[in-house]
Image (cartoon, rainbow, N blue to C red):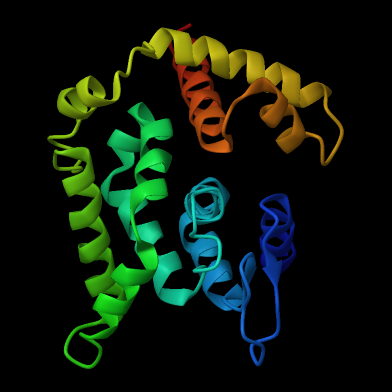
Length: 208
């Protein structure tokens, strides 16, 4: 089941899974085993964020491989609070980094430190530099929101999430990504809004 779901999500992001003995072109990946592990270990929503980060940002859709997938996954966990509040800016920063060069630099450390950890640290440093601020959960809030011109309140995002939940329930299978594109919303922003709405509604039900 997990492999079928991985393939389905990859298809949503126009990412083709190819055999391990083929060299990937832009929009292709051989890392289905890694993607399955991330999906099983960290959940479908998390895996979708990983794919959105790599497949929907400039020049990164040809770098979807084992180390980059794990690095993005680790960074999403490390920066989860910041991403919730600055989802669009998260993707904008990934548009600006030169992931290929960073991966090449990390490869120079092969044999001396785990490649996944080296790549994660180098990407984190570059994202922090571009944002002009640390991206950790404890220090990222106000400074980055100010730099990004972030104005959406939590209540507005919750209301957006409720509308999106209703809209998705009316759509047929395969229509969701097209609906978001027409609405001018990224999958990442929509997913975060719907999650906030579900959490808010659950809190209301629990308090009743």
